[in-house]
Image 1 (cartoon, helix red, strand yellow):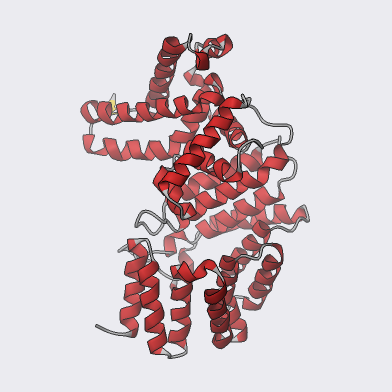
Image 2 (tube, rainbow, N blue to C red):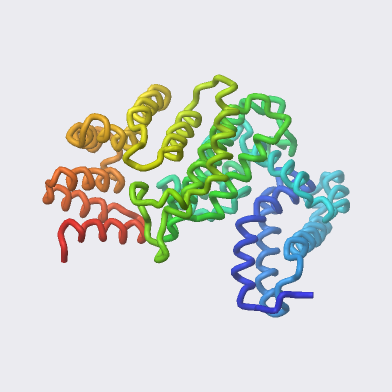
Length: 420
């Protein structure tokens, strides 16, 4: 039995591409080895292409996930039969394993275990940190090369080279597809990548959506795998990051209106904030605090919690948030952290002080090329009724922005200050 609405086939296939891509690559890699991860990716991509064509003409199967895994399994076996005498597939045990591919293995726990192994395989010490992140985003999260390039603000050529180097290291080091003994040593890079994935969904750099829910909830899913793993002993950062993502996700339904326009936090209807996600965030934050390990994720989650528990924007505990940002800077002094801090700074010490901080950041850091700095500066100048400087900063922000969604939003802000 099939679902007959053929117009839905491509949309549903795209959904599975994002949500099943990493699971399928991990599933296949278990049987053909990390050295052949490129082949696993090729198999998954061919599977999805077949799905687009088959579902278009025959309708969407009643169980599309099983259809995808069955097709991927058959493609894997066929490819290994063709290549079993070549050097990269000469390992007889790998070929024998392929014959044992069972669709029953796509149970939730099994797939989660394989994704966990893939995460840590991509973070092998022989692979550079930049390549590690690229591998996870590409292999586990189904990011396109252009999406990764935008996330890092580098060229697609640079990302492609990092992926080539990373896959080469997986191959030449014959990295076993299993959890490492030093799993806690590799945990920070895994968490960093998951955070990057969530941020790309929270504020997409490439597409014009306000929120890319698929990326955000995939990041939450991957972090839940970490918190549920018995192999990881020190989970404070895992709980903290999960708390941060839950708390930020709780505001999704209030971040845009019916025309998919961004709604700033001070204008959001807090009744629409998802209390269930807030409770999950607080629960994970409490678990993190029990381990008494201060980290950037813990501080960021606490900042987000302060926003979520405040009854209004005006009643937010800005002094506490400013203090938390000061603590964060002691651990991780980055220009973007200082930029985010200026909002709390303006609430506690005044807008003039915040403007001085932003002007200093503009002169002394790479944020001089970031539209967010100029947008924030414009907002402060507007509040100070310095319209000419606000207009100048809005225009500079528009010239630097890379996303049409943000350009439209800032242009609207500009017209409110200087009506056309």
